Amino acid sequence: MNAPGSRARVAAAAAAALLAGSAAAWLTLPSEAGPEPGGVSAPLTAAPLTPPAEPPRRTDPTASPSTASPSTAPTLPAPARFEADSVGISMLVRPVGVATNGQMALPPSPAVMGWYEYGPRPGDKEGATVLAAHRDMPDFGTGPAARLERLRRGDVLTVRSGSIVRRYRVTQVAHLEKEGLDLEAIFDRTGPARLHVITCGGRFDQATHTYEENLVVVGVPLR
Amino acid sequence: MKILRTSAVLALALAPAAFALPAHAAEKATVSILHGVPGATVDVYANGDPLLTDFKPGTLTDPVMLPAGDYDLKVTAAGAGADGDAVIEANDVAVPAGANITVVAHLDASGTPVLTPFVNDTSPIDAGQARITVRHTAAAPAVDVRANGDVAFKGLTNPNEVKTELPAGTISADVVLAGTDTVAIGPADVQLKEGTNTIVYAWGSADKDNLDLAVQTVSGMHSAPSGVPAGGGTSSNDAGRYALIAGSAALAGGMVLVTRRRATARA
Figure 1 (cartoon, rainbow over the protein chains, first blue to last red):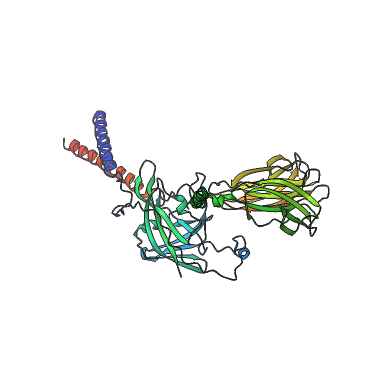
Figure 2: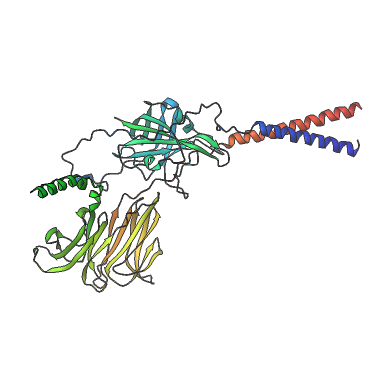
């Protein structure tokens, strides 16, 4: 066994390894369509969020303005669990606020849903209760929120706060481009009571590791 | 006659335009009144009309909408009547259209009752943040305001204010004589609700040992977060990809080694 022959063999092996590795790397480059293979990307809808029509208000003749003031109203419990049975979602919910970059702070794990604690609570008479969860995250994989896009109008959403159960009927499943997104509408604290469940969707930008769209599911309270 | 009729028609034609002006709501101002003079129950008159009766120290009124303009304000002892002696009088107090104002009846630094109109900052607040305003309306020297033990505002004097924006939450606040650790008021827990302006008034008199705090909250200045970053891709795919790359490389390299070794053996 001479040394030069052995070196050549190792070099050839190394070259083959490099070639095969590069080929594998090239072949497995993630497609631009996003990391959920086989998922049919829903058509982009440019339609803005449409707040549901305001139900006729019943005026309570006994209610005086002072007792109706928000400062004296008892605080409703925070949401603790979110369920969408028709697409097999049941997730823990915990309160979240704002990250240092000014965006909504989400639980790191896609298994947990965040509730925007500065906005309306489930059961509040006005405004949008906002829930949001990561569709996927590095180190965690894809979460249940990726299935939100399969929801259809009329599906029922459930939000539990301890023993209190509130149900919502889906009125809109909107794919909205993040660029130019009307965030004031998504986080609206006025208008009819409604539920906004948000995750990401659309194209995944490999460079910035972000999705180009938000998926917003709008629900209205069911009696 | 003809000329008169023409002008009458003109006036009528102009009227709808005047009514259509969208500035209607802005022609009013939101006004709250705080009573910060210890020991005196009073009545308050605006332009000679009673505005508040039996107004007790430490009380803050709910905000009322008043037409913008200049007001002559007069504070009398309760029940003294519109012509009664003025405890405090302030003429031509400007109430600008669209403004949110708190008029404070309080003691000046030397203990004389005065009226000070403060304009409340209702500009938008970043999501997750809260505004805090501190107003010195007490017969007391310059003070420092501390938040959670650290000096937040230095050398505040009567009748001035300082303000800042902080992450929403509860802070423990106290007021010390400027440059000292001598606590004049507090500590008190102050809840800073997101998107609101919490206004803290120091009022009363240091000499009479009745310094106190009054708190007003102006809400509705919240903003939406700047986005919902609800996905970051997956590294599980990446991990699989790297395993495949390493695997293929090892396999190819191994195959080359084995074929070469066989060839060598045959030779």
